[in-house]
Amino acid sequence: MVRKCFYTIWILAMMLVIFTGAKAQQKINPDSIRCKMQWFADAKLGIFIHWGIYSVNGVDESWSFYNKKISYADYMQQMKGFTASKYNPQQWAALIKETGARYAVITTKHHDGMALWPTRQNHLNVVTNTPAKQDVLGPFYKALTEQGIKKGAYFSLLDWSHPDYPGFIKDSSRYKIADDPERWKRFQHFFQNQIHEINTAYKPDLWWFDGDWEKSSDEWQSESVRKQILSIQSNAIINGRLQGYGDYETPEQNFPVSRPKYNWWELCMTTNNNWGYHPDDTAYKTPFEVITIFADVVSNGGNLLLDIGPKADGTIPAEQVNILKELGKWNKKNGEAIFNTIAGLPQGHFYGPTTLSKDSATLYLFLPAQTAGNIMIKGLVNTIMDVQVLGTAAHLKQKVVGKISWSPVPGLVFISVPENVRDEYITVLKLSLDKPVKLYRGQGGLN
Ligand code: GLC
Image 1 (spheres, rainbow, N blue to C red):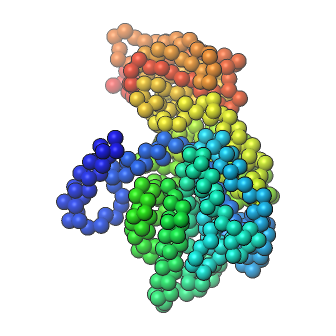
Image 2 (spheres, rainbow, N blue to C red; image 1 turned 90 degrees about the vertical axis):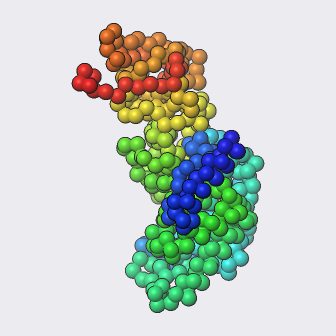
Image 3 (cartoon, rainbow, N blue to C red; image 1 turned 90 degrees about the horizontal axis):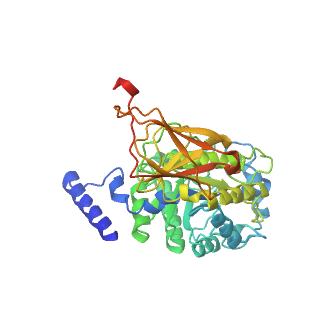
């Protein structure tokens, strides 16, 4: 397998050299990264962690001073309360493991510039500037590795606290790059060094850049950032917020309706309406809602990166723990329909999310909204050999209706789902097909 991937990449690289005259490519060719993306495609669930000094007063992460909801001085005062006194990275990792997630992405540094590791770049970090006085990043990554969970590093390219960064508060900036290119060069040197520090000390499996919108690809030195990362971790995955040099797309809080055309994508989503700890935000999604969204995302070929915001002492709010545990419970029972699957049927065949096994001979139906009663599948050419309620011993009967002997159009399949097999959140039916799925996509008698 590795060898096959190597040859594919080699051939593609040669083709690129021939067709582009060895010029640097502007966009990443999906075929050249297919092998390294496999774990990501199989993972389906990641946990996002926004942890920083904003958790002390429970204000918006970085944005609160940028948007002038609070003064910069008051925002930075929060440093004094970031204790991490009950921080237990093993417990965090165990909780993440319990959800079924296969990767976790933590804010190594948000837009406020406060690093969670002891950066050597003479800049804000929790070891020097807060009572936590410890590297909180390293122990978490270690705990993740012990649990077999991939390590993700969120990194804000922009840094509103850095004296050499032009942007600061929404209506004031420090300087214009054109007026002082040397100063900007110093900043480039700074962020490249910070990335290098994280890369060498912790070797993240995945980089999650953010804040790229304030500058251009050239200004962020996107190509060299990518090269730098891959020179140390050749299989590291890089999210799409690196202006043309990322591997996958990151829709944020917005749910796609039609199936995204990207090869790889990940919906990042909060559990309430905020990324960081925000005690006044009680608008939590219910486990049912999160699981419904999760099934929908996976059905459309994406991953869910579900966010939590720990408190300043390192404990995770009870509401968030509850969501993670319920999701984990559901995954334990129904995970076969989620992990290592591929996107399900296109719209029109079943009124709910679906996924397929990799050989596409097993079809999983997610019954939306606590459905019981007769469900219907349209346009399935296959014969269904067995219908099982996932995670239970129950097998259900099917009835094929309206199959016309002379017509190539398949009949409708009805499956009666009794109330007593219903899952607490979303019931999944496992349909074993006679062979890889084959669909009729026509318009009845009209073609
Ligand atoms: C946005 C916000 C940021 C948050 C991120 C998570 O880019 O600027 O605060 O961390 O989304 O996706």
